[in-house]
Amino acid sequence: MAKENQFVEQIADINADFPQWYTDVVLKTKLVDYGPVKGTMVIRPYGYAIWENIQKELDSRFKKRGVENAYFPLLIPMSYFTKEAEHVEGFAPEVAIVTVAGGEELAEPLAIRPTSETIIGTMMSKWTQSYRDLPMKVNQWCNVMRWEKTTRPFLRTSEFLWQEGHTAFASAEEAERDTLAMLGVYKEFAENCLAIPVLTGRKTDKEKFAGAEATYTMEAMMKDGKSLQAGTSHYMGQNFANAFDIQYLGKEGVLEKAYTSSWGVSTRLIGAVIMTHGDERGLVLPPVVAPVQCVIVPIAARKGGVVEACEALKAELENAGLRVAFDNSDNSPGWKFNEWEMKGVPVRIELGPRDIEAGKMLLARRDTLEKLEKPLENAAETVKELLATVQKDMLEAARARRESRIVYADDMASILKGVDEGNFVKAGWCGCRECEDKIKEETGATARVFAEGESRENCAVCGKKSEHVIVFARAY
Image 1 (spheres, rainbow, N blue to C red):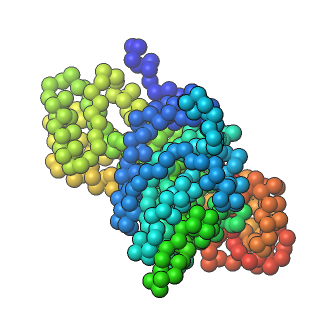
Image 2 (image 1 turned 45 degrees about the vertical axis):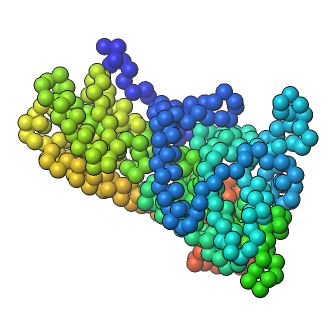
């Protein structure tokens, strides 16, 4: 009976208290735990397995574009940051600084990297001598530290994991083209691997990365209607090349300055998956990145042949390349159903004596909770097809939900009403910083991304002629 009382713990109502629901889910599904230092998290094996699958998918995409992985130091001399004034000003409040090491005060303080533009720019300057050295495309998978005041696991923590790509090109055109191409890589990955539809485009100057000429973003709608910046790609122009002397001898024998870009995504993507797809039962994971794609739950496991049939099925599915769990614990089937549903496993397979005798298996979809009876013959092909369907349907459901919650506004009252109701709001903007600031002050919404190709007659704030259409939303 004690086991029965361990039935999956209650989580907060997703509709009544979304923030508490999120916290309950990440803790009770053992994705993370809190670290001993305020604002840090311990990523537990189940959470880290999702990150490993994200890494694998993205890394293969990067390498197809000629990007090579490298690693750069965690500690960066503070003098490096002062070389690019806008950059250091943008990060100054978040930088953690080491002043003592080995029991002695350091001659120069060292920053724990909040990002690596400065150290990579320094090394690119050393490595770039001739036009033959370009383009240079490097990426590192690493941790960064940004001393955040308000934190939440995966979404905003003082230390997190990410990848940061840095490139140098001979021309502005090449660098700008690569900046947008990487944004396209992120969009394809978000939609086809995470089943998250994203809006992509340029950020306003107020919202761009410190030191960049232009920042491009992908914005995802969470189930509470807030936006999550899920990834960015930055065109740096020659700002960092000038600051760090990234120059090369051109074909004509003249020294030229390079053009650079950078791009990155982080463990924030795991938070995006949780808040895009999760429901009142817990996680709902897209099959491509789910640590366990299907779980086999035996029914009447004590009866002869059931465990053996489940083990044979597990072997068949694993041989087909699927990530499979066989839950042969002594918990009841009902307990197991609830536990694996909370963990978001895309497909559950139930197999008992009657199923085996009939040559069938019962499949339960996590996304729709639909149950399907299928033949045991060619089980791997059947499960693979179902996982592909789940992946596609999750994206379509998320996109339909987002599209139903995009509204237009022509004045401040409509913007406020739109974001209060959990929508993305498209509104005309004159391009004036004061109008952008006023929207944030009065509605709590920020400019997330330019809606390219759209037009509105007037600015929703001042009424002057609109120069752009902007997607406004409250954001994480």
